[in-house]
Figure (tube, rainbow, N blue to C red):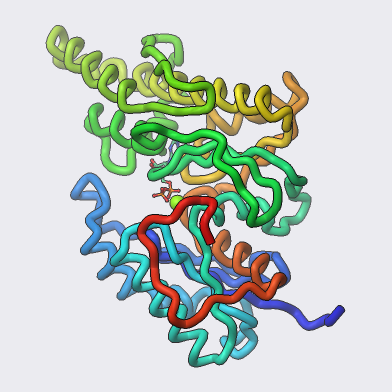
Length: 343
Ligand code: ADP
Ligand code: MG
């Protein structure tokens, strides 16, 4: 085997974070993320503004990632980028930049599926980190997706079940919006929930298939519950914020845990990973850790920096493809819609 080190630059621009990362032989040397503040006042991501911000951020973010890695761009072995899914205007910025850079440096270009990358972040080599063996189950929970995926090999995945309406991140964000909290509300619900009573209020769980999810009914239930109570007491939210957040979070996490249990029963696989922005949630992390003791599962919980959108997960996916000489042509185009099983 050659002893030459493999340096992969990863570029992520699918939504509202511009990110670049350099990894060397599977270890992260840098992972720079520029969050776009511009969307907060609109209560959600504005696609047009996101593309413009990517355009402004991408050069300095990539430069910083290369600098912090302690290398120069001439050391790079390949450029990996998010091809989709995501917002078209945002994806185009990263895609075009990655193509130009790969062409300019005369190195391979590698297209990465953002949803696969959330899962493949578990293959980043960390000090004392554990890497899941095949096959394992991953619960991918983010602002746009909620899926249970069976992973048989790095790029051999099967969706066992997914949401039939809203994603779990949306359930957090929309509930937060009902409570008058700013976007994205997920992290705030998590924060306030820690001081509240999770059993204070009860919300009903959806009745859908064993491995399917549904969150739109819960959102409506929460909306009516708040409207009803605010009518009686205009200060209801303020006086009960912690308990409301704790109860909402408890209901959502119960739903997720029920589904993982169903998946374990269905597949008899006990290696369970979580991925995506909502895997930053303290309650799901705690519950999974407890599941190791209670049910003998082995669980894989990503480091916080690899939960929400980041380029380290793109770089590790690129590295795994690089090892198989799976490069993409420069005629490759961004794809707003892409299933986790594609690419
Ligand atoms: P996507 O790529 O689908 O846009 P991300 O993977 O970036 O989504 O995840 C963003 C989502 O994660 C948002 O909906 C946000 O509210 C949610 N989120 C982030 N941290 C937490 C948390 N601690 N608890 C619950 N939800 C969270
Ligand atoms: Mg994401």
